[in-house]
Image (tube, rainbow, N blue to C red):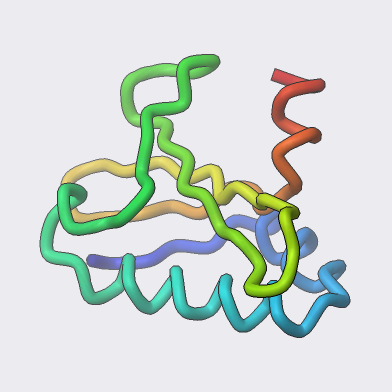
Length: 94
Protein backbone atom coordinates (compact mmCIF):
# COMPACT_ATOMS: atom_id res chain seq x y z
CA UNK A 1 0.00 0.00 0.00
CA UNK A 2 1.06 3.58 -0.59
CA UNK A 3 1.40 5.66 2.58
CA UNK A 4 0.73 9.39 2.94
CA UNK A 5 1.43 11.27 6.18
CA UNK A 6 -0.49 14.45 7.02
CA UNK A 7 1.06 17.22 9.12
CA UNK A 8 -1.18 16.47 12.11
CA UNK A 9 0.03 12.87 12.15
CA UNK A 10 3.68 13.97 12.06
CA UNK A 11 3.09 16.41 14.93
CA UNK A 12 1.38 13.73 17.00
CA UNK A 13 4.17 11.24 16.23
CA UNK A 14 6.93 13.70 17.17
CA UNK A 15 5.18 14.47 20.49
CA UNK A 16 5.31 10.82 21.63
CA UNK A 17 8.06 10.29 24.21
CA UNK A 18 7.40 6.62 25.03
CA UNK A 19 9.95 4.45 23.16
CA UNK A 20 7.81 1.31 23.42
CA UNK A 21 4.90 3.12 21.82
CA UNK A 22 7.07 4.40 18.98
CA UNK A 23 8.35 0.86 18.38
CA UNK A 24 4.77 -0.49 18.30
CA UNK A 25 3.72 2.35 15.99
CA UNK A 26 6.55 1.63 13.54
CA UNK A 27 5.62 -2.06 13.57
CA UNK A 28 2.00 -1.21 12.74
CA UNK A 29 3.04 1.14 9.92
CA UNK A 30 5.24 -1.61 8.45
CA UNK A 31 2.30 -4.02 8.65
CA UNK A 32 0.06 -1.56 6.80
CA UNK A 33 2.72 -0.90 4.17
CA UNK A 34 3.18 -4.63 3.51
CA UNK A 35 -0.56 -5.34 3.28
CA UNK A 36 -1.99 -5.81 -0.19
CA UNK A 37 -5.57 -5.14 0.95
CA UNK A 38 -7.32 -3.72 4.01
CA UNK A 39 -8.39 -7.18 5.12
CA UNK A 40 -4.75 -7.98 5.93
CA UNK A 41 -4.45 -5.16 8.49
CA UNK A 42 -5.06 -6.35 12.04
CA UNK A 43 -7.40 -4.50 14.40
CA UNK A 44 -8.69 -2.23 11.64
CA UNK A 45 -12.20 -0.89 12.20
CA UNK A 46 -14.38 1.69 10.55
CA UNK A 47 -14.45 4.99 12.40
CA UNK A 48 -18.17 5.52 13.00
CA UNK A 49 -17.91 9.26 13.65
CA UNK A 50 -16.81 9.91 10.07
CA UNK A 51 -17.56 8.80 6.52
CA UNK A 52 -17.07 5.36 5.00
CA UNK A 53 -13.38 5.80 4.14
CA UNK A 54 -12.24 6.68 7.69
CA UNK A 55 -10.66 3.86 9.67
CA UNK A 56 -8.98 3.42 13.03
CA UNK A 57 -6.47 0.84 14.12
CA UNK A 58 -5.37 0.11 17.67
CA UNK A 59 -1.85 0.10 19.05
CA UNK A 60 -1.13 -1.44 22.44
CA UNK A 61 2.09 -0.86 24.35
CA UNK A 62 3.94 -4.00 25.44
CA UNK A 63 4.02 -3.16 29.17
CA UNK A 64 0.92 -1.13 29.66
CA UNK A 65 -2.77 -0.88 29.19
CA UNK A 66 -2.60 2.38 27.28
CA UNK A 67 -4.27 2.10 23.90
CA UNK A 68 -3.49 4.47 21.06
CA UNK A 69 -5.42 4.74 17.84
CA UNK A 70 -4.20 5.64 14.39
CA UNK A 71 -6.88 7.46 12.43
CA UNK A 72 -6.48 7.06 8.68
CA UNK A 73 -8.31 7.37 5.40
CA UNK A 74 -8.12 4.40 3.05
CA UNK A 75 -8.97 4.86 -0.60
CA UNK A 76 -8.08 2.20 -3.17
CA UNK A 77 -4.42 1.38 -2.47
CA UNK A 78 -3.55 4.58 -0.54
CA UNK A 79 -3.52 4.99 3.23
CA UNK A 80 -3.49 8.58 4.48
CA UNK A 81 -2.48 8.80 8.14
CA UNK A 82 -4.34 11.61 9.93
CA UNK A 83 -3.85 11.34 13.73
CA UNK A 84 -2.24 9.16 16.37
CA UNK A 85 -3.69 9.83 19.81
CA UNK A 86 -4.79 7.99 22.95
CA UNK A 87 -8.17 6.32 22.92
CA UNK A 88 -9.52 8.87 25.41
CA UNK A 89 -8.82 11.73 22.95
CA UNK A 90 -11.09 10.23 20.30
CA UNK A 91 -13.83 9.31 22.75
CA UNK A 92 -13.89 12.87 24.06
CA UNK A 93 -13.60 14.75 20.75
CA UNK A 94 -15.49 12.62 18.23
